[in-house]
Length: 273
Figure 1: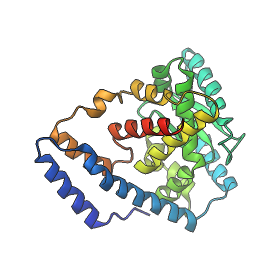
Figure 2: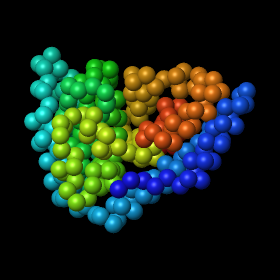
Figure 3: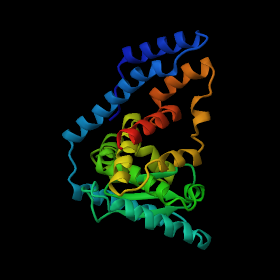
Figure 4: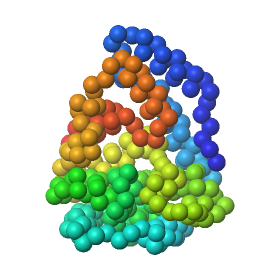
């Protein structure tokens, strides 16, 4: 089942993008209402499909267990030189899972590390959360940053995003076979279990609340963005054409632009005080 994108939304977006690209100093934020409206429409489709094809927590857990089991068989082992990073990840991700905000799969979360690169972290249905070794290298000993990452992925599970994405993109007749057909990898899983821009921002907001509930510093989320190259400079320094084009790519991509995600996180942190 695919998302249906209203033609008038795409046409309007293209028109706005073109007009902004012709101006000397366009406002990047002027495209936000349009791209967010599209993302919210997509999120609404996810929720509607979820209502039509509900998964109980136990059903979702069984699906996640199946993917996790096959993924573990397909993945190479993690080298001993990464043992310390894995131990830190398990420690601080476990701390995140003890937040009182975690209710849907409380006490059932499983955290793993994968040596594959590309994707920084991802969550499977039912409470299985993976972080890549490369991400853990970048975050080093920053425990609060690890909690933020874990909180973001837990948010995708607790808010129902993983179940919605699985139903919508992996099929509803035999979803497990659809995902596991062929060679299983991080890239394949991530392609099957994607989230809308609105859901990514929602998971960031959830992680801020989770960190507040644990009396941790949510500004660690900004340090996480810095470690991933989503700095304030890269988020704001663009010329007119890049600004207009980014508005369109934000619409079609699953993740919000770095400028928007960082600004939204700063607002979430301030509002959570």
